[in-house]
Amino acid sequence: MAQTHSLFSTPFVVDQLQSEAGIAALREVIEAEQARDQEGVSISNLGGWHSNTEMIEWGGEAAKALALKAMELADAYTLDDKSPNDSRFGWIPEMWANVSGKGNANQYHTHPGSFWSAVAYIDDGYQGDDDPSLGGHLQVLDPRMPMVRMTAPDLRIKESNGTPQVSEMSVRPKTGMIVMFPSWLQHAVRPFHGNGTRISIAINLTPGLKA
Image (cartoon, rainbow, N blue to C red; front, side):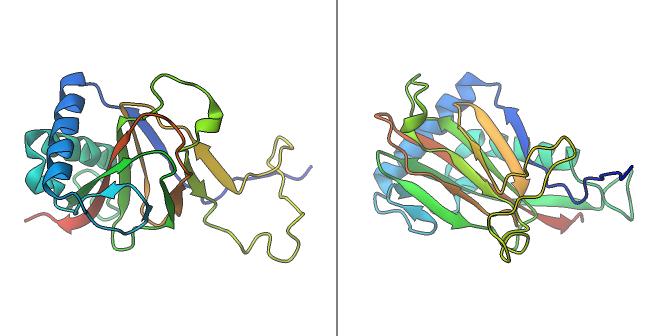
């Protein structure tokens, strides 16, 4: 009988922020920075407010603690081939905030130049409403696309259990959730239709040799 092996999997890490006080402090510094710089910048965001990428500087101790959390996650899922017991690499973090209201979204993009990317949700904006029509889901795209389906889009590869492979995954954010994935993984945010305000923080981690 033929055997099936799953090759080249893509890690997608989901964890939870444990400090409610830390989440509240992050909200406070983001709201203060948005009041100071109301225009922000426009990169992948379609509407909403996108801060500059210097949140490590203006975010205070709460931002530094979140960066440390992301770096600890990265350490847990990364191996230095030439020094597996004591990695020669540390992480250089870059961080920014996104504030989204009704109708706002983020187009598909990657974070070239980084190794890991993470998103922490300070407020999911759903206000406790589980209605899936509120949107705002994080979307991640199969990195093998479009090659595996470009010759016959109606054909799907089966998993070993017989189910068809998915080409796009949808993750519904939750306040306090933090996710991490390779920076080359294409991701987007569907239009958000909640009545609340979505507040999230994005983090890029670039490896650097330790001194």
